[in-house]
Image 1 (tube, one colour):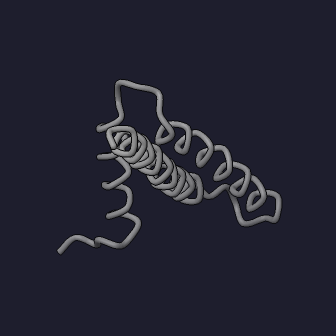
Image 2: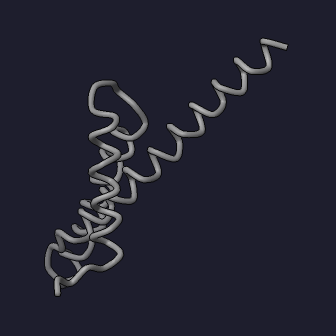
Length: 89
């Protein structure tokens, strides 16, 4: 039986979100970029403290950034939908 944890599940969700938003620039890709940058900074701090460079921290930052970006993108889509719905009245 494979070892499936929450980070594996969230990673698959993040990959699916990146595939959905592949063609256009969106908050999902911005979240991925910011997540990688923040994850790399935290991993460098681990390196300086003597624990070694931890690639899992970079991956977790990328996953969390992608999911945060998808939430921001979803809020934008909902806002546009509500504006269109309100203008029809």
